[in-house]
Structure formats: structure tokens, C-alpha cells
Length: 462
Image (cartoon, rainbow, N blue to C red; front, side):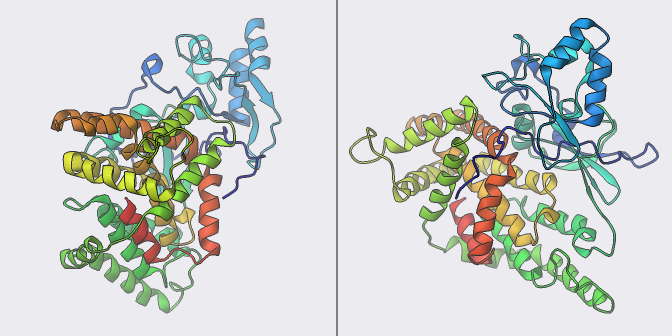
């Protein structure tokens, strides 16, 4: 896998845009993730400020906000000139500038108290939209605004991943967005069957990935089986719902959605999945390549430390010691598989909660219309799920906990802390930069596509 050195790895995700119109006040109240109802920024108490390690894009409206708010004084005008870099090249036509960062990757307006200087000195209304809304996300689906949260924020990660209903959507009793904003819109036009049926299909996948009494890997198999069942007629730009075919395709889709949730069907898949024996060497190699490629370009010390600590922890188990030894994919797989089993024994319920919530959050954060097929979309999820599971299970702090006598409370506490660290760091360093995952997706597409078997192999790793 190779990422162009010309790629800009510090630019925030393209979903941070304000070009879409916000729903009017006459529309129904927004849906919101349960986690976001109780979210509050930790400010100076945050372990990884959102004002570090990426460049914030500024659209024209945000630039005008800053100009109006900061140029009322000579000092403000001077600071604006030093803060904003105008005319940065970008494929995003709405982006006209970026905020400068210092040599440590922090916004130049970030104070020593870890608070935003723009907000402190000039007020929230002066903030660029990307800064104002983060870590909130806003997706419009079938006329309803869905307010979610970004796992690149440590506090959002805790609220989403560590509570049973963290990713669940429900009617919100209050406005959670600091300003009118919609990041993405999924068109409900019946002429686009792939998008039109997204709410129902996504709900089915969401339920499958949240099934109790099944580990995340088995849940992914249930979802992959459903994707395989509808793959011949439900995909981007499908003609199968046109004209006289529509009624037949609607019935097929409804029937497959019903079958996917039947207990007998799930039991049969789970039995086959449990009996499957496989090796995860290939998955380990893909994950390590993904992490290594990210390190080729500017990255945060937090990400570098995480990858280094994990690799060092694994290398301790290489025969002959860690000095000058690089663990092979086979050795990494053996270490990971052994520790994963120990985690499942000592804190399996907590592990299932965290990684199950990660999968469900992905569905709400990333609509499957981003991918050509459901199988491709689930493959994109599976890669990330495998990567964060790997970073969590092989973390040295968790290794130390597993080496100590079992203690249910301590085991769950350490697993939770390590998982949040791994997931939040990964989300900020890689989840926001689609080009890294897109390279893997393109390679898989060229070499045979996204089969049910490929997803099962990734599910076995998880």
C-alpha cells in the first residue's frame, strides 16, 4: 500500500462543511445519539485537544465570521493575518483558507490553558464552523437531522463506547448544534433506491451489529450475510427497483431484512462461524501496513507513541528478545490471538460492548451510500474494527493487567481506558483521512472484490 507523499494528512475530514442548508425550525426536532445529550467539552482537562494535529479548513462564510469578529481592533486584525493562510489548494471548492499550526501541530490560537483564544477573546460566533460544531456531526437522512459525535474526541469516545445506549438515536428535546449546520445529506428520492432504502437497511444492520449474546465478530458475519443476500439487486445506481421490477425487488429486500433477524438463521451462521479455524497473519500485515503508511507523513506524537508501544510490547515475545528483532506477521498474530482470548475470558462483556458500539457508531456516522455496495461498506468497517481491536489487545498496559491476577473491576477499567485511547487516537490519525482506507479498498476491489468469505476472515480476527 502506498500513499502519495503529497497528501495532506492533517486536514480535517471533508464532512466538516457548512455548504448544505440546515433544516428549518418548522421541521421535526433532530434525532441525536444518546451520548451527545450529555456531552460537554472538557477543555483544559482533555487529554488530546481537538486544536492539535490537524489543519482546520475555513470556508468563505467562516472566513467572513472571523473577519467581522476579529478586525474590530488593530490587535485582532494583526492576529487574523497571522492565523489564517488564504488560498490553500484543495479539491474542496468551498475551502478558501486554513488555520495555521505551530511546530508542535497546535493551532496558534490555542492558549497555554488549552483553551481557544478566538472563543475567549472574540466569542463563539467568531469561530470557524469546523471549530464550532466539533465534535458534533450532522447528517440529514430522509428529512430528519441526526446529531452524532466524532470518536476523534476522547470524551465522545467514552460516552459512545462505554455505555449500552451510547450510539442509539432518539428524538432530542433540545438543539445540540451551536449553529445551523448540516454536514451530509442522504437524498430520500425514490428514484435512487440505494439511498431511498437507507433508513430501513441501516436500521437492520444496526440491530444485527448490536445483538446481545453474540460477540462482535459473529455480529459482523450476520451483517455480511445480509449484504451478500441483497448484493445482486441492492447497490449504488441499481436498476432493479425501476418500473415493473420495483414491487418484486421491494418484496425481496423486505424478505431478506426479515430473515436476517430470525433466531434460527443467526444460530446457524453462529454455529458455522464458531467452528471456523483461520489464521490472521494477512489481517495483521494489512493493519501494520496501514499504521506504517500513516507514519510516513506528519503525525502526532500521541499516534507515534501508541504504535511504538504496541510494537514494542509484541516484540518482547519474539524469541531472542526485542533488540533488533522485528516480529513477523505470524508472531504478531500469535501474540494478538493469545491476548485476545485472555481479554475475552476476563473482560469479554466489556470488550463486546466497546467494539459493538464502535461498529454501530460507524453505521450512523458513515452512511452506506458512501460505498458502491453493502459488502464494500462493511469491509471498510471491518478493517477499522480489526485495527482498533489490534491496538487495544496488544497495548502494553493491557498486557500488564493480564499478567496480574484476575480482578474483574480492574480488568474492565484498564480495558476501557486502553480501548478509548486506541480508538480515539486511530480515529483522529486515520479515520479522518479516507485516503488511507481508500487505498486498501481500491486494492481489494482490484483483486476480487468484497466477498462474504473475505468479511468472515476479518470477523474471525475481531
